[in-house]
Length: 178
Image 1 (spheres, rainbow, N blue to C red):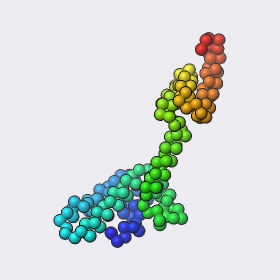
Image 2: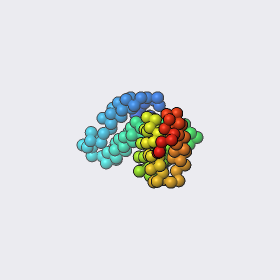
Image 3: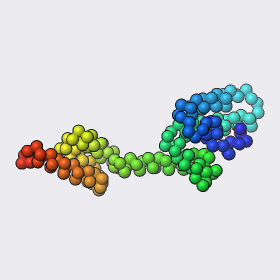
Image 4: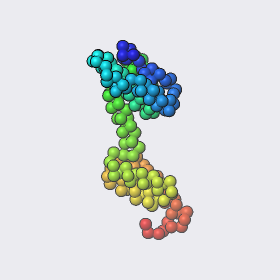
């Protein structure tokens, strides 16, 4: 196994199919780790054999950590299916950094860049779900004080203000002081 280590995908390392469930991957990891755990081979005097077993175990562990995470697994499968698939048998640090950057960008796109503004935006979304328009408006305005240039907050605020005005008109509170 040590001689073919660099030519095997994570699925081959764990001896599972690409459509295996998380439970199957976990069972395969435990099965393989029991076989190749370095502590089982402490008594060997051959340093090369110990190094080989240690590298196999590291790769099995790496395979498990990539395949158990749905996001990393999808990225890994996409890399394997691509034209450079033979060169992307390992989930490298660049791939990990790219994956984290994509996840962070998704959070920023969804909720903003400032932690305080995110908190107020989440509260505003909860207020919108409850149709508590004045509270949603307050939370969005407060969130905008932390991120004045956030266009998504501004669009959501305009939508909430329109709904709040419509609600006031229909409930007869249009002339009440805000």
